[in-house]
Amino acid sequence: MPIAVVVGMQWGDEGKGKIIDLFAEEADIVARYQGGHNAGHTICFDGQEHVLHLIPSGIFHAGKLCIIGNGVVIDPRALMEEMQMLGAAGIALDGRLVLSDRAHIILPYHGTSDKGRESGDRFRRIGTTGRGIGPSYSDKIARLGVRAADYEDEDRLREVLFANYEEKKQILKLLYGKDLPPFDALLEEQLGYRETICRFMADTGSLIRKEIAAGKKILCEGAQGTMLDVDHGTYPFVTSSSSSAGGACTGLGIPPSQVGRVVGVIKAYTTRVGEGPFPTELKCGFGEQLRAEGHEFGATTGRPRRCGWFDAVVARYGNAINGTRALALTKIDVLDKFETLKVCTGYKHGGKVYEEMPASLKVLENCEPVYREYPGWKESTVGVDAYDKLPGNARRYIEELSRLSGAEFTLISTGPERGHTIRLSGLF
Ligand code: IMP
Image (cartoon, rainbow, N blue to C red; front, side, top):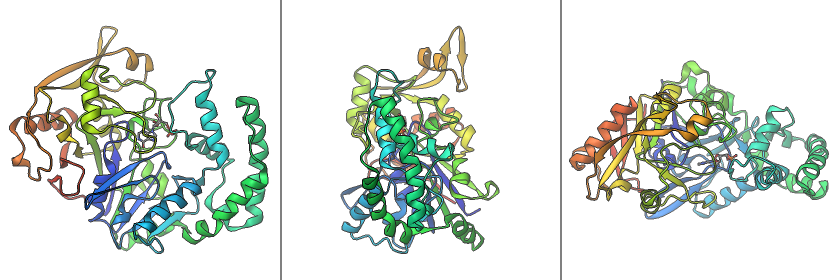
């Protein structure tokens, strides 16, 4: 089947940008299915680093069509900035980028609401990116959202914006003491985006289904990761969308029966940003070493990422939910200097060992990880491009990760550049 989903297996930041950029070579279309500009996909080539938040990571390959699907929430301001950044890098977007007319829009009051909820002591902090993602998805589910299609007609846009503005004005004042700028300022800004939104907008579900029928190869790009999925992640410390592979069908309008392959992207250790349980977190020097060696600072917010050992409970759970049989392992080179490595195989809590992911926050927050230890390899793997060139202990560690996770590796990444890659099999 010519449709593959590439999905994050942990709490995001697995290095999906590089992997999708590599796999894009084999696809005709790269389509992003959820999230918004909370994501940060870093891609390095020719010695330059590019960070994308919204536009699919396939955009750097000439001739590939990039789609922002109906499951994505679009902040027009962020979209324009990214378009300008790509324009300045010499990448033409006309005919290469299409936005779904069913995608929901992030409006400035969504950001106000997100930051308001995160700032007060009275509310539970999630540690969000503050970009209005959750409030925009909340409006979508509450049937109050504004969609790209609403920008087609000026009167219609004014009407839907006004109804929402009036409600938000009262709620934001009451809850967070925030005053919104006047309605005319909101309308004027959004009218300024109309021409661009309308020029790039289409019924992308219909477009994708026609391309599938024509035998085109589609790469569905996930953002964030399985553990941040609103249903399957560490709720409520999650993002507000379906970031696991199932989200590709609803977020793009692809029938589930058409998806042939799911590849999970997984880092050789674990990180997370924001609040929430993280059983293998290292609050000691090893965590700081991982952060320093792996440059573990958020690509979107610059926040330091929390770091810890590889968690095979998370990996097995991700494989089960996503149906991944193949994994892309990233950042193995970050472990080059460690004497000993640990991998978590279960969580001990209340006299019981959990080998499957518990829903209970109480268990996740208070459990003791059960670890296996492995000797490090203490030599550089940066840029290694063939499996048998890896040190013996690195191969043994990788084989253990595969065995404990229950999936094969299709690719191993040994550095940020495109060439720093061991390819073991193709995407489709
Ligand atoms: P939100 O998506 O901004 O609402 O944030 C909800 C949670 O998801 C927070 O813990 C964020 O740090 C996390 N999050 C959102 N996007 C990403 C990402 O791209 N990588 C890692 N964490 C993310």
